[in-house]
Image 1 (cartoon, helix red, strand yellow):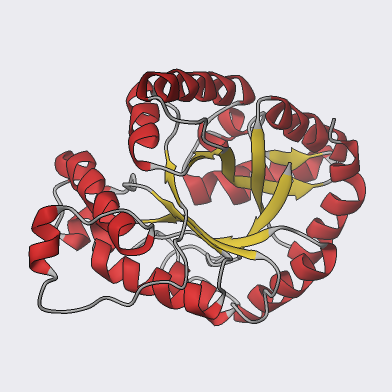
Image 2: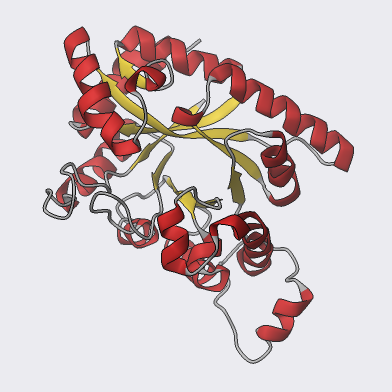
Length: 307
Protein backbone atom coordinates (compact mmCIF):
# COMPACT_ATOMS: atom_id res chain seq x y z
CA UNK A 1 0.00 0.00 0.00
CA UNK A 2 1.39 3.38 -1.04
CA UNK A 3 1.20 6.41 1.24
CA UNK A 4 0.54 10.02 0.30
CA UNK A 5 0.11 13.04 2.54
CA UNK A 6 -2.52 15.75 2.72
CA UNK A 7 -1.04 19.23 2.77
CA UNK A 8 -1.71 21.32 5.91
CA UNK A 9 -4.18 23.68 4.28
CA UNK A 10 -6.56 24.29 7.19
CA UNK A 11 -5.92 26.80 9.98
CA UNK A 12 -5.21 25.54 13.47
CA UNK A 13 -7.30 28.28 15.10
CA UNK A 14 -11.10 28.51 15.04
CA UNK A 15 -13.22 31.17 13.39
CA UNK A 16 -12.35 34.31 11.44
CA UNK A 17 -10.00 35.54 14.14
CA UNK A 18 -8.11 32.23 14.41
CA UNK A 19 -4.56 31.63 13.27
CA UNK A 20 -4.37 31.34 9.50
CA UNK A 21 -2.75 28.47 7.58
CA UNK A 22 1.05 28.58 7.63
CA UNK A 23 2.48 28.29 4.12
CA UNK A 24 5.91 27.47 5.55
CA UNK A 25 4.47 24.24 6.90
CA UNK A 26 3.26 23.34 3.41
CA UNK A 27 6.78 23.65 2.06
CA UNK A 28 8.21 21.64 4.94
CA UNK A 29 5.69 18.83 4.36
CA UNK A 30 6.46 18.71 0.63
CA UNK A 31 10.20 18.48 1.29
CA UNK A 32 9.79 15.81 3.98
CA UNK A 33 7.41 13.73 1.85
CA UNK A 34 9.81 13.81 -1.09
CA UNK A 35 12.83 12.91 1.05
CA UNK A 36 10.94 10.09 2.80
CA UNK A 37 9.86 8.57 -0.52
CA UNK A 38 6.10 9.05 -0.17
CA UNK A 39 4.00 8.50 -3.28
CA UNK A 40 1.88 11.65 -3.39
CA UNK A 41 0.77 14.93 -1.90
CA UNK A 42 -2.85 15.99 -1.94
CA UNK A 43 -5.20 18.86 -1.17
CA UNK A 44 -8.90 19.01 -0.38
CA UNK A 45 -11.56 21.43 -1.59
CA UNK A 46 -14.09 23.73 0.04
CA UNK A 47 -15.50 27.05 -1.10
CA UNK A 48 -15.82 28.00 2.57
CA UNK A 49 -15.03 26.24 5.82
CA UNK A 50 -15.50 26.92 9.52
CA UNK A 51 -11.76 27.62 9.71
CA UNK A 52 -9.52 29.52 7.27
CA UNK A 53 -8.63 27.22 4.38
CA UNK A 54 -6.05 27.41 1.58
CA UNK A 55 -7.49 26.70 -1.87
CA UNK A 56 -6.67 23.14 -2.90
CA UNK A 57 -6.02 23.32 -6.67
CA UNK A 58 -4.06 26.56 -6.31
CA UNK A 59 -1.97 25.04 -3.52
CA UNK A 60 -1.09 21.99 -5.62
CA UNK A 61 -0.07 24.14 -8.57
CA UNK A 62 2.18 26.22 -6.31
CA UNK A 63 4.15 23.16 -5.15
CA UNK A 64 4.27 21.19 -8.41
CA UNK A 65 8.01 21.69 -8.93
CA UNK A 66 8.85 21.11 -5.26
CA UNK A 67 6.92 17.82 -5.31
CA UNK A 68 9.02 16.37 -8.13
CA UNK A 69 8.48 12.63 -8.49
CA UNK A 70 5.29 12.55 -6.41
CA UNK A 71 1.69 12.50 -7.63
CA UNK A 72 -0.43 15.61 -7.08
CA UNK A 73 -3.94 14.59 -6.08
CA UNK A 74 -7.19 16.39 -5.36
CA UNK A 75 -8.84 14.55 -2.48
CA UNK A 76 -11.38 15.79 -3.36
CA UNK A 77 -12.25 18.59 -5.81
CA UNK A 78 -15.82 19.76 -6.43
CA UNK A 79 -16.67 19.90 -10.16
CA UNK A 80 -20.38 20.62 -9.70
CA UNK A 81 -19.60 23.61 -7.45
CA UNK A 82 -16.50 25.02 -9.13
CA UNK A 83 -17.93 24.24 -12.56
CA UNK A 84 -16.53 21.39 -14.66
CA UNK A 85 -14.93 23.68 -17.24
CA UNK A 86 -13.22 25.79 -14.59
CA UNK A 87 -11.96 22.72 -12.75
CA UNK A 88 -10.82 21.14 -16.02
CA UNK A 89 -8.76 24.25 -16.77
CA UNK A 90 -7.15 24.04 -13.31
CA UNK A 91 -6.37 20.33 -13.73
CA UNK A 92 -5.01 20.80 -17.25
CA UNK A 93 -2.74 23.57 -15.98
CA UNK A 94 -1.60 21.36 -13.10
CA UNK A 95 -0.95 18.49 -15.55
CA UNK A 96 1.14 20.79 -17.73
CA UNK A 97 3.25 21.64 -14.66
CA UNK A 98 3.49 18.00 -13.56
CA UNK A 99 2.94 15.73 -16.60
CA UNK A 100 1.70 12.27 -15.73
CA UNK A 101 1.53 13.03 -12.01
CA UNK A 102 -2.00 14.42 -11.53
CA UNK A 103 -4.84 12.42 -10.00
CA UNK A 104 -8.26 14.08 -9.99
CA UNK A 105 -10.24 12.88 -6.99
CA UNK A 106 -13.74 14.35 -7.27
CA UNK A 107 -16.90 14.33 -5.20
CA UNK A 108 -20.23 16.07 -4.79
CA UNK A 109 -19.27 17.57 -1.44
CA UNK A 110 -21.24 17.21 1.77
CA UNK A 111 -21.35 20.89 2.77
CA UNK A 112 -24.70 22.66 2.38
CA UNK A 113 -22.81 25.96 2.78
CA UNK A 114 -20.57 25.22 -0.21
CA UNK A 115 -23.64 24.41 -2.30
CA UNK A 116 -25.42 27.60 -1.24
CA UNK A 117 -22.36 29.69 -2.11
CA UNK A 118 -22.18 28.05 -5.56
CA UNK A 119 -25.91 28.49 -6.16
CA UNK A 120 -26.42 24.71 -6.47
CA UNK A 121 -29.47 23.31 -4.64
CA UNK A 122 -28.24 20.78 -2.10
CA UNK A 123 -31.04 18.37 -2.95
CA UNK A 124 -29.91 18.42 -6.61
CA UNK A 125 -26.27 17.66 -5.82
CA UNK A 126 -26.10 14.11 -7.20
CA UNK A 127 -27.61 14.91 -10.61
CA UNK A 128 -25.39 17.97 -10.95
CA UNK A 129 -22.34 16.01 -9.83
CA UNK A 130 -22.84 13.21 -12.37
CA UNK A 131 -23.28 15.69 -15.20
CA UNK A 132 -20.19 17.63 -14.12
CA UNK A 133 -18.01 14.52 -13.93
CA UNK A 134 -19.02 13.47 -17.44
CA UNK A 135 -18.03 16.90 -18.71
CA UNK A 136 -14.78 16.82 -16.72
CA UNK A 137 -13.92 13.41 -18.12
CA UNK A 138 -14.56 14.74 -21.61
CA UNK A 139 -12.20 17.65 -21.04
CA UNK A 140 -9.32 16.02 -19.14
CA UNK A 141 -10.01 12.27 -18.91
CA UNK A 142 -9.97 11.25 -22.55
CA UNK A 143 -13.73 10.58 -22.88
CA UNK A 144 -16.13 12.14 -25.36
CA UNK A 145 -17.93 15.26 -24.23
CA UNK A 146 -21.70 15.05 -23.81
CA UNK A 147 -23.35 16.34 -26.99
CA UNK A 148 -24.92 19.41 -25.40
CA UNK A 149 -21.55 20.47 -24.00
CA UNK A 150 -19.93 19.97 -27.40
CA UNK A 151 -22.37 22.58 -28.66
CA UNK A 152 -21.69 24.92 -25.72
CA UNK A 153 -17.93 24.72 -26.25
CA UNK A 154 -18.06 24.98 -30.02
CA UNK A 155 -17.07 28.64 -29.91
CA UNK A 156 -14.01 28.24 -27.71
CA UNK A 157 -11.28 25.93 -26.52
CA UNK A 158 -10.29 24.62 -23.11
CA UNK A 159 -6.65 23.70 -22.54
CA UNK A 160 -6.15 19.94 -22.64
CA UNK A 161 -3.67 18.08 -20.41
CA UNK A 162 -0.60 16.49 -22.05
CA UNK A 163 -2.20 13.09 -21.35
CA UNK A 164 -5.51 12.01 -19.84
CA UNK A 165 -5.90 12.65 -16.12
CA UNK A 166 -7.36 9.74 -14.12
CA UNK A 167 -10.60 10.69 -12.38
CA UNK A 168 -11.25 8.96 -9.04
CA UNK A 169 -14.76 9.30 -7.63
CA UNK A 170 -15.29 9.74 -3.90
CA UNK A 171 -17.94 7.86 -1.97
CA UNK A 172 -18.52 6.84 1.63
CA UNK A 173 -19.37 3.35 0.33
CA UNK A 174 -23.15 3.16 -0.05
CA UNK A 175 -24.65 0.91 -2.77
CA UNK A 176 -25.73 4.00 -4.73
CA UNK A 177 -22.26 5.49 -4.27
CA UNK A 178 -20.56 2.36 -5.56
CA UNK A 179 -22.78 2.33 -8.65
CA UNK A 180 -21.78 5.94 -9.24
CA UNK A 181 -18.09 5.12 -8.84
CA UNK A 182 -18.42 2.23 -11.30
CA UNK A 183 -20.17 4.45 -13.87
CA UNK A 184 -17.90 7.47 -13.62
CA UNK A 185 -14.58 6.62 -12.02
CA UNK A 186 -11.11 5.33 -12.78
CA UNK A 187 -10.90 4.48 -9.08
CA UNK A 188 -12.74 4.78 -5.76
CA UNK A 189 -11.63 7.25 -3.11
CA UNK A 190 -13.05 6.49 0.35
CA UNK A 191 -12.88 8.74 3.43
CA UNK A 192 -11.09 7.24 6.44
CA UNK A 193 -13.09 8.94 9.17
CA UNK A 194 -16.36 8.03 7.40
CA UNK A 195 -15.65 4.32 7.06
CA UNK A 196 -13.98 1.31 8.67
CA UNK A 197 -11.87 -1.48 7.18
CA UNK A 198 -14.91 -3.79 7.16
CA UNK A 199 -17.07 -1.17 5.45
CA UNK A 200 -14.27 -0.46 2.98
CA UNK A 201 -14.06 -4.16 2.11
CA UNK A 202 -17.85 -4.30 1.68
CA UNK A 203 -17.68 -1.28 -0.63
CA UNK A 204 -15.06 -2.98 -2.75
CA UNK A 205 -17.28 -6.06 -3.04
CA UNK A 206 -20.19 -3.88 -4.19
CA UNK A 207 -17.88 -2.21 -6.69
CA UNK A 208 -16.68 -5.58 -8.00
CA UNK A 209 -20.26 -6.77 -8.44
CA UNK A 210 -21.08 -3.61 -10.39
CA UNK A 211 -17.94 -4.06 -12.54
CA UNK A 212 -19.03 -7.60 -13.35
CA UNK A 213 -22.52 -6.38 -14.28
CA UNK A 214 -21.07 -3.74 -16.60
CA UNK A 215 -18.39 -6.00 -18.02
CA UNK A 216 -15.61 -3.73 -16.77
CA UNK A 217 -12.27 -4.52 -15.19
CA UNK A 218 -11.98 -3.96 -11.43
CA UNK A 219 -11.11 -0.45 -10.29
CA UNK A 220 -8.49 0.37 -7.65
CA UNK A 221 -9.53 1.84 -4.30
CA UNK A 222 -7.73 4.32 -2.04
CA UNK A 223 -8.37 6.07 1.26
CA UNK A 224 -8.24 9.81 1.94
CA UNK A 225 -8.40 11.95 5.11
CA UNK A 226 -6.61 9.46 7.36
CA UNK A 227 -6.03 11.88 10.21
CA UNK A 228 -2.78 10.98 11.94
CA UNK A 229 -1.06 11.65 15.25
CA UNK A 230 1.39 8.97 16.40
CA UNK A 231 1.97 9.16 20.13
CA UNK A 232 2.86 6.85 22.99
CA UNK A 233 0.99 9.07 25.45
CA UNK A 234 -2.63 8.01 26.08
CA UNK A 235 -3.45 11.45 27.46
CA UNK A 236 -2.21 13.10 24.26
CA UNK A 237 -4.26 10.66 22.20
CA UNK A 238 -7.40 11.74 24.07
CA UNK A 239 -6.50 15.43 23.83
CA UNK A 240 -5.94 15.24 20.06
CA UNK A 241 -9.16 13.32 19.47
CA UNK A 242 -11.33 15.60 21.62
CA UNK A 243 -9.70 19.03 21.35
CA UNK A 244 -8.09 18.98 17.90
CA UNK A 245 -9.73 16.54 15.50
CA UNK A 246 -13.34 16.46 16.70
CA UNK A 247 -13.76 20.27 16.33
CA UNK A 248 -12.26 20.18 12.80
CA UNK A 249 -14.51 17.42 11.43
CA UNK A 250 -17.40 18.06 13.86
CA UNK A 251 -17.71 14.44 14.92
CA UNK A 252 -17.94 12.61 18.22
CA UNK A 253 -14.38 11.76 19.30
CA UNK A 254 -15.50 8.30 20.43
CA UNK A 255 -16.71 7.64 16.88
CA UNK A 256 -13.33 8.69 15.49
CA UNK A 257 -11.17 6.67 17.88
CA UNK A 258 -11.00 3.41 15.90
CA UNK A 259 -11.17 5.04 12.47
CA UNK A 260 -8.06 7.21 12.37
CA UNK A 261 -4.35 6.89 13.06
CA UNK A 262 -4.40 8.79 16.35
CA UNK A 263 -2.59 6.77 19.00
CA UNK A 264 0.36 4.42 19.24
CA UNK A 265 2.42 3.23 16.30
CA UNK A 266 0.99 -0.24 16.95
CA UNK A 267 -2.59 1.08 16.68
CA UNK A 268 -1.77 2.87 13.43
CA UNK A 269 -0.05 -0.20 11.95
CA UNK A 270 -3.02 -2.43 12.83
CA UNK A 271 -5.48 -0.02 11.24
CA UNK A 272 -3.46 0.47 8.06
CA UNK A 273 -2.79 -3.28 7.83
CA UNK A 274 -6.55 -3.88 7.93
CA UNK A 275 -7.03 -1.49 5.03
CA UNK A 276 -4.17 -3.07 3.08
CA UNK A 277 -5.79 -6.48 3.57
CA UNK A 278 -9.10 -5.01 2.36
CA UNK A 279 -7.48 -3.98 -0.93
CA UNK A 280 -6.54 -0.34 -0.34
CA UNK A 281 -3.79 0.63 -2.79
CA UNK A 282 -2.98 4.06 -1.34
CA UNK A 283 -3.72 5.94 1.89
CA UNK A 284 -3.46 9.71 2.19
CA UNK A 285 -2.49 10.54 5.78
CA UNK A 286 -3.21 13.95 7.30
CA UNK A 287 -0.87 14.70 10.23
CA UNK A 288 -2.39 16.70 13.07
CA UNK A 289 0.48 19.08 13.80
CA UNK A 290 4.25 18.47 13.89
CA UNK A 291 3.90 17.22 10.33
CA UNK A 292 7.54 16.49 9.56
CA UNK A 293 8.14 14.60 12.80
CA UNK A 294 4.88 12.69 12.30
CA UNK A 295 5.81 11.65 8.77
CA UNK A 296 9.22 10.51 9.99
CA UNK A 297 7.60 8.38 12.71
CA UNK A 298 5.13 6.99 10.18
CA UNK A 299 7.89 5.86 7.84
CA UNK A 300 10.16 4.61 10.60
CA UNK A 301 7.71 2.93 13.00
CA UNK A 302 4.41 2.29 11.23
CA UNK A 303 4.94 1.43 7.58
CA UNK A 304 7.45 -1.39 8.21
CA UNK A 305 4.88 -3.05 10.51
CA UNK A 306 2.06 -3.08 7.98
CA UNK A 307 1.26 -6.70 7.19
